[in-house]
Image (cartoon, rainbow, N blue to C red; front, top):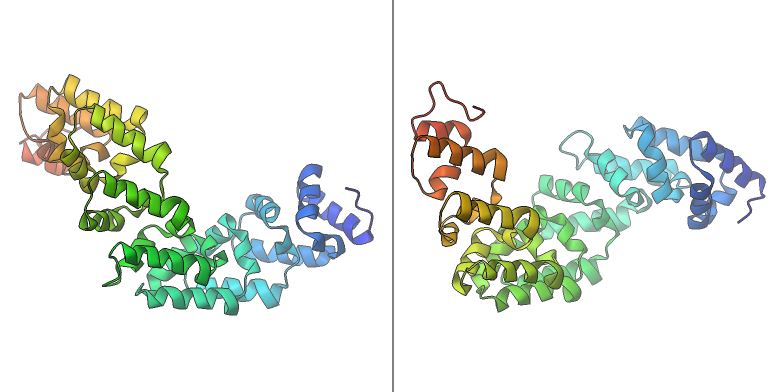
Length: 334
């Protein structure tokens, strides 16, 4: 595409001065036709404002590449009001600049038409104000979703799982704001059906959704079913697998090769324990193999000490040493 207008030529130099290559520049002009008639002074004003609020210079090219129209938006009409409103939601430094960096399109939305209704929607679900801010700034893409056709549908789905009382839906959203971006029909409902098919009751499913909602957004065929099949192959029975999933939901999304298999091999081949011992302590799969499992097993073995998996692992370093009378003159690093 050839760019011939005076404004376009001016913007070409604007981008080149800031390190953009020709392909990137042409791509931005294709994304945003407004750049062809944009004054360089206007673009520079928006660029400098973004820098002034704490966005690092090295990150600005990526932000503008994702959302070129950010340079053409009215500074005082659009960008500043959104930034100022987002700052009222900020609970930690740099949360707003981080949100803009992740999803610069947030600045192109209207405070009155998009942000305010979104805040009201979350308030109606019983989410505390501070948590609302944290949720939106963690997943700023939320502002781009339709409340009526997307967010409300996901809330209805959670209600169908029995999570409609005591602000439980709000707690799920706060725990995993990214779950609101998935399709109910293509992802959330098939996952809930799979979990029910392997034996989880309604109350089990509610507990899993509250404790680890991310499991509902994982692909059944690519992730959940293969993990379930692997665990079954290891010798776990149906009821035991339900206990494992409810006790430690990430077990269905952990890498088989890098996480589950090495830990089970260590448990059986090195520690000499039965695989079903993890039923009483599903969080066994949460602990680091080298930094915790191997190290603590080595210490206990050297002193010929026996204990359950939970006694061995469910405590910090100091409590572990105190529990087995190893605190004086001993550290795990030894």
